[in-house]
Length: 360
Image 1 (cartoon, rainbow, N blue to C red):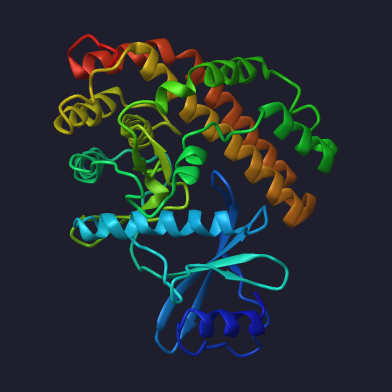
Image 2: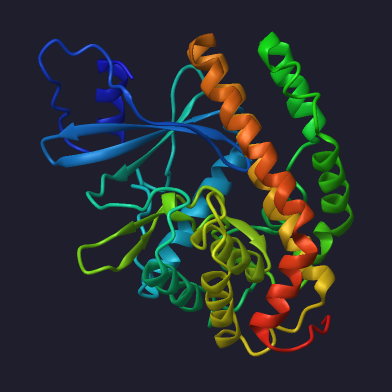
């Protein structure tokens, strides 16, 4: 971001006067481009006379009125959880708006910059994992859905509760269109991914048809900051969804028990055991429902990695091609491996609940 845009954003969000270092040119990104269900974004840190702030630059598609309502609803989710004693970081409002739109049609959101630490992706820490499981109980145990509960209309609810992950083949085609290096990668050993996608489209209605709540969807290591006394702070609510909270429990259990390294089954099962301490009927599901949640999680991980690769390549050029290829290949292997393991993982879920699932 250049000096003029930085000053404009600081004034719009009332962040104070920006402090520019000597020989300032542009504020550099502090985080790589990250995909959400709707947008991609990148983050910038800004220092002003009032403190440090994080500016989130949204990429990918025009900011329509419907999308602005969507952002407001997501941030209202974060504020609602804050009112219930859950530590979160929500965006800074400018009047009734949470977004700024520049003359190129790019949207920006502003947040307080929080000086806390997070665990590396794939890091397993049983003590912190159990705190996350307990936090999930606090988030979902008592929340009852109702029309407009978070100032979101039925059109937004219907949008959130529908499949949003485009065809993997189309994502791969996009990659091939920007770089020859991705040709072999996007054609080789992809049968498991296309099979996963078929299962996803056949079963996603199960995830979106019972006990719907607004859920975070990505309570993973990178979206949780930790205070000095070990209290979790949930950040990044841009993937808010309207779906079954069981999906969030399964996702969190996978991530915090070592999905990206080596799955620790004892931590995975212990985290899931907390699930039964929430609403009395939430554990009464069929194996088919559990498998549908796994399909949804894996598709989400794969498509976001492809989108991340595409935008990194477009923005940074071919300099990081080898790294991007490695990351994409690793994700393909990981998702394919877990897809083959879904029957086994479903049995593990059964054992952690210590009862036979009944579909409600």
